[in-house]
Image 1 (cartoon, rainbow, N blue to C red):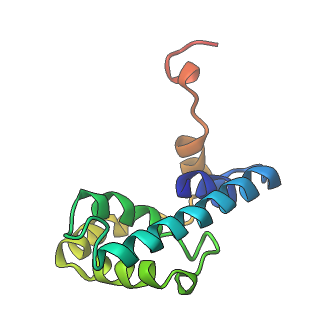
Image 2: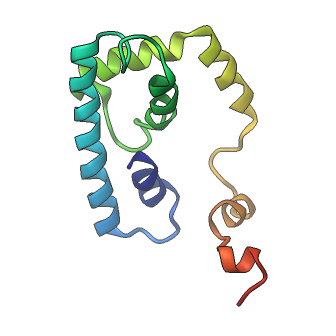
Image 3: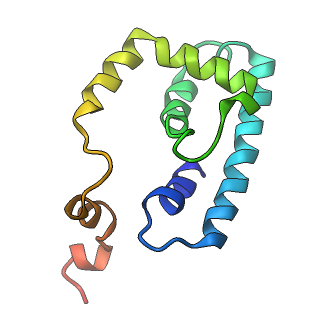
Length: 123
């Protein structure tokens, strides 16, 4: 849901209030679910560092841009800091530093303007 909220709130050319609100509410709910899970398991989503942490972490990286504060989710805030500090995560994040932000118009067209029928040459 963070991907959907991020798309509609940050990247979509047309701002659709219904979509932004719907996905923001769902993202907030899921932050709460994650916070409660981390309260039960401790440091990581499944107890030990696992694919669950690896899969969840990137979706939380845009929390500030999406208007969320992790102060509302203390267990997520702790987990986020711990995962982000891992040397392997730092190495992975360093690879992505070349990505242009914000998107210029050409990048936006490539990233969000393509439809399957256009890619497949259908009208």
